[in-house]
Length: 498
Picture (cartoon, one colour):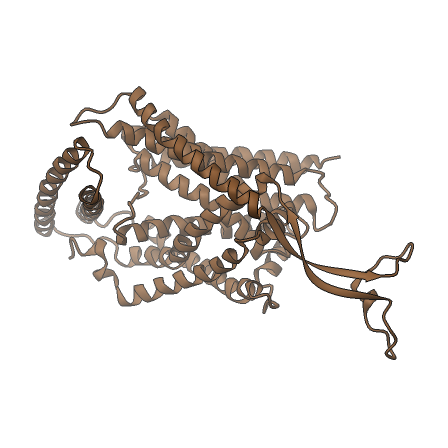
């Protein structure tokens, strides 16, 4: 019989996650989207909810298994995990691209006229169908040729003994040099995985690329920026200084308006001529840079208003950000240490130096809900690092479009983009946490799916080991960049610098 208490607790958690996702959307959405754009809001709600569920599946799995080979809670976690992971993939491959193409189609009408909803729908379908066909073809071909896991195994050959359990000790050399009753050979065995597991593996692999790059950057950038935001918070200024700074921002805004008018004309001409060659791509890159400059100017204008009208802004909130930065620094340090002494040795197929966080989670999991709370803190912090890394690199790389998250001012397109990144990386974070806390996740369905099947898939198993090194590598690069590019030399502080 299934554990009724565990089921009820899971349902309560699921409801709380939905409420939190709704609050997140309401808290961040732009006033212009308050009673409109219901379809993307539903997509964002589903995506954020699924991302949270993907993270919480591991502690539910641990509670259901209770450290035993046979499930104590009797909940079919393998089927539940796959169901949530496949739903995640549907939103990532269909929901997010369709929404992006739909609103892109709405905005790309000729001249100043926007396309109708029917035209935007046709535009989205025109792009989503080829993408899905191509993705399905690639995954299908890969599954046909390398859709199996290569798992280490030990072959024992010897005389069959009734009612005797053969183990590797049975084949150990006998004292005195006598011949052993059997022979032992180590090797590998190829085990086919289900198509669903393989689809999860391929999409998760794509998520790992984003997670390794953006997460590695965010591990360093998130706590540093939170602390620096407090150290360089707006200070109260007098009316004369306010007027002088506002004049500087006004002149910069005038230049940006002129540049924006020119860019709009060039883009419209390029779209009408159906010229999507080098010139069009150059204009799009310039448009991307223009949008970043606009966001930077808006950021400095808000700081100016806080400095004068709000006399420095809300000090309590600024203090909270510093405290969060300190906590984030501790979490980043713990993650970096755990990767260095546990995950990297495991990737090199040697014994880890220490279980580190594994022992911590096993200890705190003895207290009801405390283990889940700490696990959620460490796991969701990784997703926050991914979002921060996306914004940090987006400000510096020409080919990356910036989608900032601002409380009460986030456009729906930015919410959809960031939700897509979070949802895609939630699979890789779930896998990363399963591998990081393998002792904590012992005998779970997650450990079977991620740690045994996906981790040993032919052709991509070495990629997962490389991603572990990549996370530390990008974290190190970010450290060096912060040392040699201090705050006053960073792009977001150079456009208007005082």
